[in-house]
Amino acid sequence: MDASQITTLLDAELSECQVTVDGGDGKYLVTVVGDVFEGLNAVKRQQTIYKILNEHIKSGAIHAVTMSLMTASESQAS
Image (cartoon, rainbow, N blue to C red):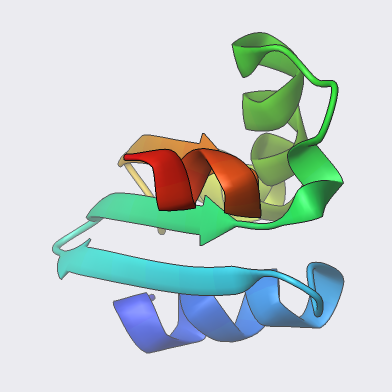
């Protein structure tokens, strides 16, 4: 599994978000910006992503995921 395949998976589920995936060899940095995270704490935000990727993590196709998850307003503030 490569970064573009992960991007496609996340885009399909989070169509109103801006998704960027970098990395390779099973280790990825996932950046998602979207209002889907509004009102969610960090753990709930990560659970949103794990729910989409969990099958591929269990299979070993993805070994490690670092996440940067924020709303559009949080993204503009940084």
